[in-house]
Length: 545
Image (cartoon, rainbow, N blue to C red; front, side, top):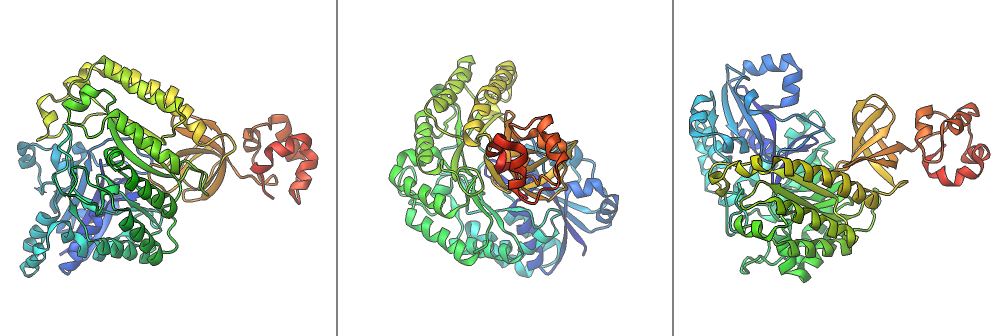
């Protein structure tokens, strides 16, 4: 039996799987197949599109399991997710199984029309049952007796080796699931299937999974596949779960004991309601994250709307005042700059446009909230503004995209204003001119600019002046700003730097750059100082001989 896993990528409120991220799902599925005695080939959708040989190979297989679903669409540098239109046309011959959040978008009629075995999200148990029967391994159905999310623990560890088949290996960030579900009453657009007490994974199993991936050469991790990291193993006897700072410290210490050479350890979601309700415990957790996770870390927080009326009508979790309190607390301990040039731990906030009860005034209140952050000198590293995506079975299904259509113009003006007037000013405070950013991984070349990012959660896009090959790692200093990105000059050797790179250094124009080139070679920075004179002290940090 010849089997493949085709990764069409996922992007969910609590899980990223577009490169450089790899979602847990390919690892779970690979582990299931391995447990049943079968090997699988792992292929990304980008590899599939670009290589006709891979397309022909997959056509000859017996089974292809396709993972897909973009629940929170964005712009992607690392990969191009599989679309629903594309899904209808690929792979005619093999038996095809479809899993992932894309199944939430399909009506029952669409599922019947597709030439797929469609397994609804969340899919892990039903997929394993299907595989046991399809592969005639009913003797393994006893695995289904393991309760809750601990069901996937065995497969997560068995499937760790699949990361070596990823085209970006070893430069991939592994998403690690700690639990599934949300304690909050269901928000109007929520796609979570577990409400009340979430289904926790055994911390020892999570640690074992991280160690298994570490042993496969992975050095980049994100504790991202949960709705609120602060409530992992929290006390759920409270209406709003109370964080467990003692557990959090022990958990983080154990990660580093087992995996001492991790390069990135970040998280994703934090519920501001938790911080507002339990400030003392949350403060201790923030301190633990600053101490044990790596700089450049971002906690994505769901504000969704700064309009109290919209908050009530959509059963949103946190009020604007509670979000503001959480931002202030996180800034108090996390805004200090780390060794990679970015603050240790900052909040990010999400706006969702098109919700029930939204009016023109909602956009004004949203903007006023952001202005308040600037006035109070509070830093947020990421402001995500998106239109609501309506899924079947959610309260938003009743009104659909009515407000999205009605407020298209307001949305466009608000988003442009945020990018131009808020994001740009915020970036200038977070990474001022001259700030050194380290370990930038080059990804895409466009003319004389190479776009690079740190391997991190929601990494800052950096346009580096120069032409560099993919997977080159560089240090660079910030020289200019876009709306959500920065321009930087790599640390330059005056003996080899291009003229246009020298010109980009603040304080060095075309004439001085020409003088630097004309007086090569330089044996030390003292030689360069003799050429630059008084300018040298202002630009010396941009150079190394």
